[in-house]
Image: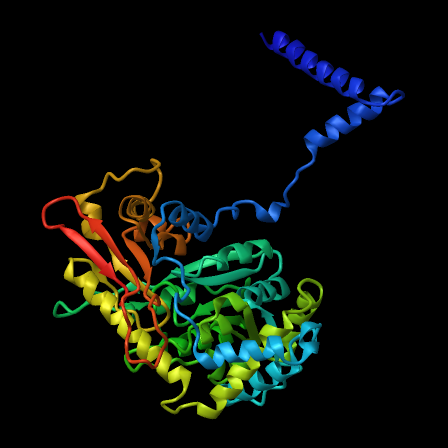
Length: 476
């Protein structure tokens, strides 16, 4: 049988070669044709750094939502217009100086790098040089990718706090690094009070155990996506002390820093003693001014780190759209004049969005779901344990996690989109957190400051089993 199979394979190769020869011009040699055939079959097409990172939850669930015409409370973007001063800034950039249609400085439009240095220098307690300490990037995503490519080398370990924004792991892998995960864990609530993202905490001993001689960086996300956890100063001091003790860099993703609720305060870890020199602070105009499509981000940090990011930037992106940068510069100039006052967008916007958050919390609680009170960001994480116990056999692949099956069932049957929280965990930890889903509550009509947060969307969930009735979820 083995000999028969060998002859069959040889015959197939021969027929392929004969067919190829017949299609060739006269004179093409059998040797050349054989070489081309073997080369085509043996060359690896994709780079090995792409292995295992081809799936993206946003692509999958956004496509599914679109196919089923579902209300999208999964993806994190506002469905209302930006404030007037932001729109006017972009209109000015487009219709004003015609040279804004051309290249600007590779590392950032000078008025933007200047205002970023001035604005954040006061917050971080640093004299920030616009040329050495600021880099403008294609969104915070671009800032993150540039940082990983510039600083993470083959075999370097990167500590990632779970749950984490899903791009941190593949970006670490693409740079040749090794992700090391440590989880925020919920602590029991008292007196029947609702759970809060503040109750999810790091175990100091477990965190310390993750630092080794190979640890190059730790990535911090505060306020955290998806939990909405705002790290306290004490928690940040723990992270800072370990980074300094082990000579580890900190990449701090702070895109939601202005969206903090209930009197909580955002603290930048770079503002703590000894941390500026080892921290990259990443921000986003999209999240800051409700213009996620502009894709303007930035990195702030010491020149000893930033010079390596500039090397990556100049050899990849090189330059970000000038007009969007000019508009963001004008927005920050306006905010600098109003900062700390009731007229500041950074005061108005979180107050308005907190009303939207509170409405969604009440809606979810009224039908027996258990939302975690988000202290920051766009998002609410919701415990679906009751559904998991009462309707465990939802359609899906045998190895598909429950939260993923639940979200797909909800999209297809109830026209409502969320994101399964397991996608924000490493593969080995996903099964322990597959009873949570994430909603985006920044889905309101009307702009901040109008004193109203009208209803943006509704979805109907139907529970199966005793005690789980029809569920109507509104965003405000």
